[in-house]
Amino acid sequence: MINLQYIAVALTTFLVMETVTWLTHKYLMHGFLWYLHKDHHQPKYQSFFERNDLFFVIFAIPSILLFYFGINPELNYLFFIGFGILLYGMAYFFIHEIIIHQRIKWFSRTKIKYFVGLRKAHKIHHKHLGKEEGECFGMLYVPKKYFKM
Image (tube, rainbow, N blue to C red; front, top):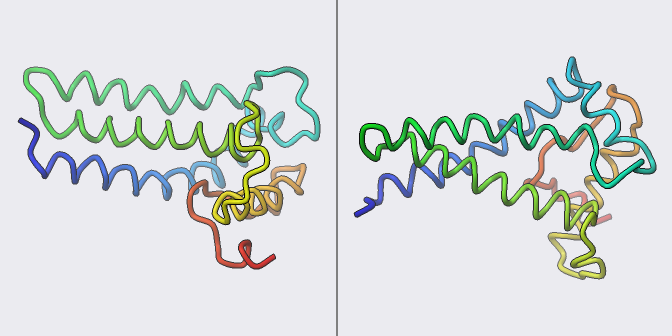
């Protein structure tokens, strides 16, 4: 049976991932990994897939390793850290790819205030076509000002 501590580890990991995402996006993706992220800031996609999509693979690796080491030799907290990362990755895909960029055309006419705020904040992030002078590097947290705009 899974105890509450393991669930707390997974939920805490999910929440911490927002900070990890912000830091990674600002300092790595808009830093030395810009060559992978650059096409994501271009006005038109050249295909359905972007080089930026490689970050899904890059971020899946720690989760997969944590799953592996979290069940060997028996189930332990590492598994649930990996599970928290997986949950965040699933939320990222849904929010970033479907809600914000609408690469899959679901929720394209949503009036949900949170989703509208997310889109506004992300548009502000994408108004900068270069790697400098960006803002709104997170994914789930949206400053209040974007709900008032």
